[in-house]
Length: 114
Length: 117
Image (cartoon, rainbow over all chains, first blue to last red):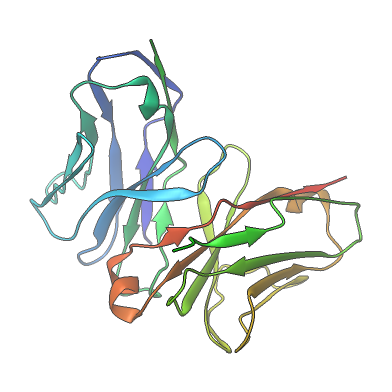
């Protein structure tokens, strides 16, 4: 079946540090991959996405590359800010399934200290 | 343009009571999805609805849970005879049309946090 595995949190970094949150997936076919972010007390927001192999999604300084050979979609940011503190969810959608049926990882909580 | 609106934000129920959670999708959106987030867990898909139709309820527990999205009014997730294990955050999401739904870009509400005593 389809599944998403992300690195366990929480992750605590100092401001301006480099961020990597690992995400790997298992899926049949050619899923689309996503990163969603959940700020404290809020719902999830789409951060970035990639719909085919070798695509790079980017937004707000974050980026992730769809690597089919390693079935990965790691999230990176060169210099994190305190305002990036949130929970980050990796997700996939396989079009063989229900439309809108995103499959989420468990989430990785990021805390950035000033 | 208001986003996805969920209410109540917080709901406390005693075991055996009923919980009703409401979701108004973004203006112009006709697809609604409900997800459940248990403590320390990711979001789990529950149900996908269009107006007056349940498209996919593969994630819904077989008993006590039901969902609807009537022609008029918000979508409602109903949990009958709640138990402590139902305590969770319930998120609603919407999308405007099939094309966008296929891209996986969903717009989430702030969630309804149910606590069962």
